[in-house]
Amino acid sequence: MNNLKFKNRRKIPVEVFESGFKAALHEFIAEFLKSADFQHALSKGEGREIPIQRFFRDHLPEAFGVAKGEAVDIRGRRGPQLDVMIFNKTRNFAFYNGALKILPAEALLASVEVKSLLSKSELESSLKAAKRLNELRPFGRHLSVRRRDGKPADNKARFFHCIFAYDSDLKAEGWLEQEYLRLSGVARDLKAEQGLIDRIYVLNRGLINSTGHTGVTEQPHEGTALMQFYMHILNFLARENDRRESVPYLEYAGRMTGGWRSLKSPSAGGADH
Image (cartoon, rainbow, N blue to C red; front, side):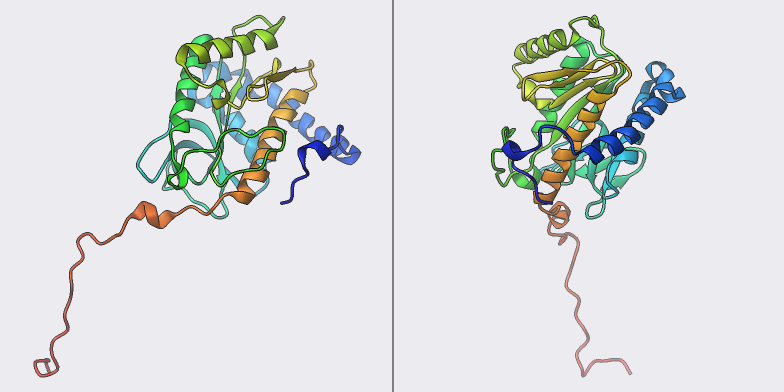
């Protein structure tokens, strides 16, 4: 899939895209907001991520799979448990396909951690988990650094890690700036890079781009920030999936020589008749 250079992109969407895609997405948003899954998400515990998983399954291209679980690299490093893992299911498969899937790190493209209520302690937990995720070594290499402004890609894999929260414990007024400041403070206290979390979306609040140091407030009943959250993930998937190498499954299996021994055929003269 060829990508337009950043500086040459349109400033506004193509009309047919805006009218067609946004209408379909807003229709889903309306169903999402009034659904029982959403209304009771804060009290359902693990069930809070189900609507988000369904959202991506329904709206991502057919080639992409959505699962809950964790990623592991060739050295045996294990990442944190992820509520949403997105990977190319047409050419990759999980090592374990139970309720929680285990993906090779080379297959993982994007991930989302789902929070009922975003708080300082939840941000701390998320940044610690993001640090663990960043310690994975797909293809035996460090992950690529974040790229901006259309800079060319290197030969390393890159993950796109996000937070989706149903609500925040900060006041709605001035939420965007205060949430960003809280993220920066938590990152500073943990001596972590805040950009380990690429995007933070809080329902009916807005979207924070922590790597670009920008944000957008959600307009009431519009869902435009949610649309941008989805489009940022989709755009990353399109770019990263095209350049990502195939998963080296044989390397995970090792040499497969243990327990094997030589077998000899009987000589011609001693063969049974």
